[in-house]
Length: 316
Image 1 (cartoon, rainbow, N blue to C red):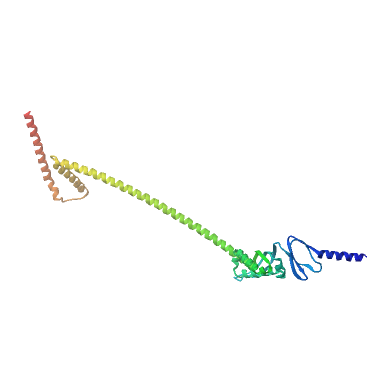
Image 2: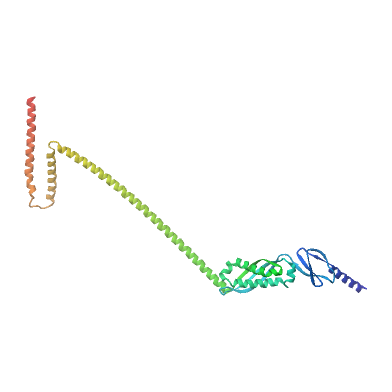
């Protein structure tokens, strides 16, 4: 009796579980009737005909994260790197995801690996780090194009790690060290060049200022000499004018000749003192005649003046 009761309870449980189904909010269920697609069950409570209907597929409708395992790829410059990534996808059509492909997750992973190898092979090792965003976009486009018949939408793909071999890493570190040293040398040389340029500019400006000062000094000196010459010329002209006026007066010509003779005698005396002269020039002998003429003129001038005074006295 207890055995029959247990069998009845099991049969009742089987009937109840086959009679209705509760679909959760995060999924959709594919209902089949006698092995054929009947409909897609949305979230909620649904009745089934036992032994006729069955819930064939349960599809996750939320966005799913798929880990793409690491794999070895060869870059365009024949460098071996290990690359892995993460794919984000979502089921858009549960009917296609159920009947379009047996396992869309495995297919998406394999397609992501194949596309990633192809993209890595197009670029060099140095570009794998700078072109990562572009590679992600290309992989998403390729996977999404292939996954469209599956009712799956690939939202994005991210390359997680790109790891070269240890030998390549050492080589890259040495290369980066050399590059940093080169940049430091370039920066130092540029600083030295700028310093020399600034020094040359400062020296040039200094020379310009010195030349300007010298030019201004020469201009001032020239103006001073011109002013001096002008003043000397003016004074000389005034002196000559006064001499000419004095010569025009009575006895002026004789005074000029007397002055010239005095100067001549003075210069001649200096020459005689500084040299040994035995023979004198003819002009020196004529000096007596000149002075005798001057004495005669003086006597006449004196006599005339005396007579004039006597006449003036007698008249008085």
